[in-house]
Length: 500
Image 1 (tube, rainbow, N blue to C red):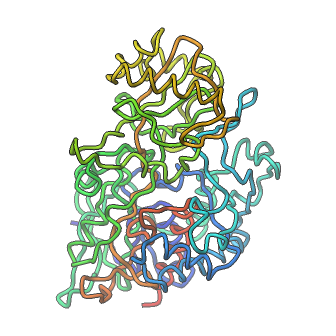
Image 2: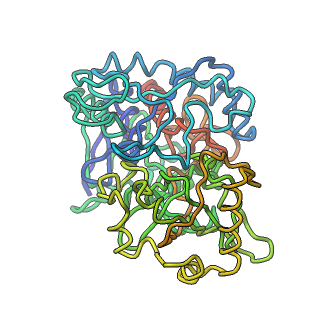
């Protein structure tokens, strides 16, 4: 067994891990990072890279506390927000820049309508909750040398849109600049514990065997959540929900390591999930959206259950995670988008790019996905219902009612008339739709210094966490926060560990 000695070891190289390593190194610590994949980036690199700004920090703290149903300590939230306020300056100081784009994260394609479902708001997804007005717009980050069109954040030398990928390039460049040691293809598996219960380092698995990395000042867990751990998802959510992140990136090691030293876990049932698709022959899910108004979303009884255009992008999954007291299961998992030929030609029914499958070349008329059998098709609504395993009479009645509402302008779910069009042009289409994870939120509870807390409310000496692993966000995720939290708590954890 080989051994390495350092001041601080960071376990997981996503946004939180990169920030923690940079902050610790800039605070004078000798830092080692371990990363289970061969290149790092985590879900930050796969994300939209949106970073929240704030109009009023105290109102923002109140808003986040309200949405976490009081489960997250105010000083923890305040530390995150007050650190996040410094991020614009941080990027300027670290060879990066802020990139401002469309305040609504639509997915327009040249020659096609903007996405109309689901919607992601510039402010909070929960605009009626106390303190929502304290949240400001979002920005993205890119290397300072790149140029962008200020309106569309496209073109210039960047050759595309600012996103998690451009954010990661800034973070990675700073890791390289600081000469931080990174062990790739190295999986953190077990904490090294001193006789007094404090954490002394971590044992990791590599292709060459086990490596021990001992840290004089602290271990920082930044390994993300458990979006790719089927057992934990079933235990916590009652279903193996698909994820937008890449396979093998979020498998719960950080949670299990924290549990080994008695960490107090919280928010384990909480998540950020949108509507999306998961197909057996693709490794991750797709972010669903619709570009034409001729569609409905129905449950397994063939019934609509919401104004489809108000299912917010980060919280839409909550509308599907509703147990049925008679079935003893979820009747909205999956649910089904039903649409017609005209809507098919309005554009791809996914938000592109997004998540691990961002590079997938979804066809603009959806024909390739129909040919693959992902999208079912039929000449009549009744035949389509049969293909989808839905009750024919109910589905026909649902579509007839929707079409009548298009004419009368009176929809019982109050869908705006300009976002409705009769489903009448054959052939007709249907696709199974699931809650698809951006993030799980659960993990070890931490204090304002990002120290992991035990069941007695005391800090586990030598152990810190940041990012999605023990997020402050509860079930009601307001959008634009997980990347922000990863960056801010990474800074806090890195500085705190280096100061031990």
